[in-house]
Image (cartoon, rainbow, N blue to C red; front, side):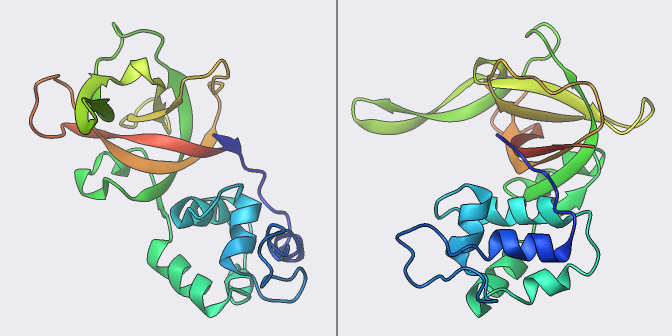
Length: 206
């Protein structure tokens, strides 16, 4: 999970992402007016993960106007990929839509940390190796994640967000979160997903 500090200007954003890529990306050149996949991946701090770098970009330019000036600097391939994978900006209420599972989304609200399994019980599917065969196993979500309820205000519906377990916790303050919607099962032997949660990759304090 990485903190995203939004760009304050179009020129600042372009300077940051038109960066030449990493040293082994010989075809990318810094400050040439063309932003490639390799350059955006470097700015996002990822390797060959298009969905995450597009999520980073969307979160980093959300406070700017005229963002088409940034996407117009993309290489044709990057422009096509961003159009196909552009993250959704949703409310906590909209986040509970099962049809969105697998999508990259951005949601803003106040996260409330759930301290124990007595406050919340839910299960996720994780891959494990058994006798050299990969299989899926259901485990409590709190075994691998710090889990929060996020809401816009006290009267709004809540939505679950989570990040890999860490000593760092989100404060109970307005925060923008970006990640991927995943299935959540309420009963260990359930056959179908009962709800969803946001597996958080990036965050921005607001």
